[in-house]
Amino acid sequence: MRALSVLVFFAVSFAAIQTGIFAESVLPAPIVDRDFYDDGRPSADKVELGRMLFFDKILSGNRNISCATCHHPELASADAVALAFGEGGHGLGTARRNGKTLHDAVHERIPRNAPALFNLGTREYTRMFHDGRVEIDPKGYYEGGFISPAKWKLPTGLDNVLAAQAMFPVTSPAEMAGQKGENDVADARSLNNAAGPGGVWDLLARRLQSVPGYVALFRAAYPEAVKAPQDITYVMAANAIAAFEATAFRADQSPFDQHLRGEAKLPAPAQRGMQLFYGRAGCSDCHSGPLQTDHDFHAIAMPQIGPGKADGKDATYWNATGTQAFLEDFGRGRVTWRAKDRYKFRTPSLRNVELTGPWGHSGAYDSLEAVVRHHLDPVAALVRYTLPKTLLPALDRVVELQAEGDAMRHAWLTGTRLAGFLARDDFVQRQQSLRDRIAAANELAPRDLEDGEVADLIAFLKSLTDPRSRSLTHLIPERVPSGLPVGD
Image (cartoon, rainbow, N blue to C red):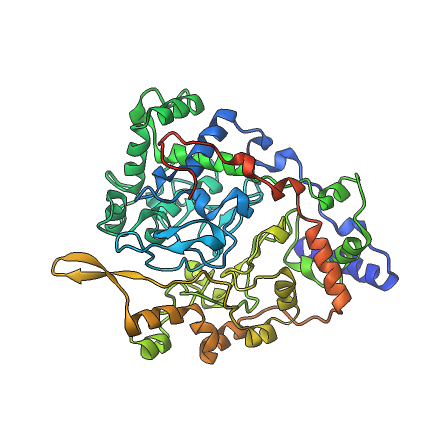
């Protein structure tokens, strides 16, 4: 049936191209309330609890970073940089800088671009993260209902895959947990204890149990389950965060949505771009469905910048710098362990794509036109790609953990070790042997478009922007129950 549908789609599209008439039948159905969790009407108390938690630094090991730091309403639910600083950083977006003291400094760049959160509360999302490492378990193998890095240790009771995703940033040393020796959460993480007694999720729940304001919010959100502070769990927190994200970052009022509902026509350039998108340009081959994503994984020779995910065993960087590290990122391949899935990443939704740069799994492109043109000839674009000097926030001081007897201590990287660390930013891209592997996996054939057609495509992509998403500052609370500062 799927093969027949694809054949019909291409037949209709080809006929439209030949006749110059666009067939509206190739367009997706409009998004409606029932496409979202809770049919688009979650509990208001649960959403409010999630809003407080989303902006509260109490969920980070060192109480210095919140979910909003890398997914900020002022930055289109992301952070506006290619690769973020998590722990050890100060400020938001392009103004974020590394700390200056040994115990308040950056240990690494986050290896992948922080994805925007728009429409993640729709039921069609069954996988989260660029590599889909958290996903609904279709075979029911895991009791919790989700495949994840925690495997069978993931607690039960999570409402949906978005809530399952919210369990994991707090366990990452570079993102929210901090480094061993800095706090109890980081120490639990260093022992690989997320789910057990005294583990990351247990410790964070205890923090919330100790704050009267949160006890009241949890009782309101979960009146049947929370009778006393000790009833509060991190699973409840993750469910509330997901409810907030699904509500706050819903984006379905764009000009394209109005077009689908028959309320208005797109302007002429966007109309031409839409015909290209669903026709000769082939964009909808992968960017299909109501959210312009097939939720599958594809290798399109996207440049890798930054430190990667330590995949593979290529020792080129190790030999060049003397630093023991592997810099490749196998994408979906590091989840499935299949060679054929290497360098594949999830097709992103294009809703609000105008607002959510830099683009690519590592944020390699800082203009919408550049990433569109990459798709026209991915291998050629990969070969000529050069990392813009302004794309990554500068790192002038970096700290590492070093062994000192049976203890660990923080120490600044200096000299050749610092130079080697900073070389990671574009090392993979500068090494032809590594770059060739990314190119060899590419599955996207070149396409010829004129400059005017590229401009029309971009006009259509901009028609996917929900005007409400341009300003989301109303989501930011003045204060949070912990009393920690909301700003950064």
